[in-house]
Length: 191
Image 1 (cartoon, rainbow, N blue to C red):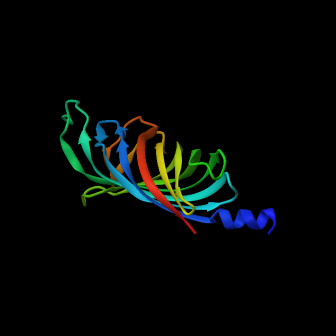
Image 2: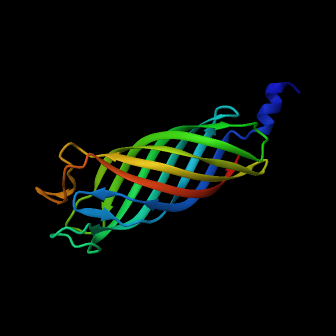
Image 3: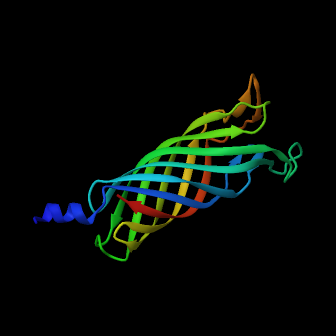
């Protein structure tokens, strides 16, 4: 058996990783997104022992709260809000392929979907990108534990309007980016 055939047997081509974590942050002009759990799925295609292309979906079920100014008292719940992230990206994993622990860094881009749980406000979708880093801990030939920290940023238009209905906006301001940090863990299965 040649080296290419051996590599093909050793490394799975596709990896599916359900994950669970916690998302922190997310501020708009007069409102804050409450820190809350996030969960999702990563589907990756291994290009070689170090590179992978990924499709990522995650959702955070949270709520929008007042940030503490005179019109939006701190902790005043405005409405429940789902923040969905749909992205495509790539990772680089370093270290020997059979090592028990390897480092991973990645970047992805796509959209964040802001879906308010109120009929008075329309949802919105915005361009988003992520930077992330973590570890891949080998559990078996076809399973890894992936621990990761990431930064997710959505670009808002120049006037900062988001979550608007008709000509009225629930959240508007001069913010240009909506930033969150996500800490997650998942078990990936290779095929």
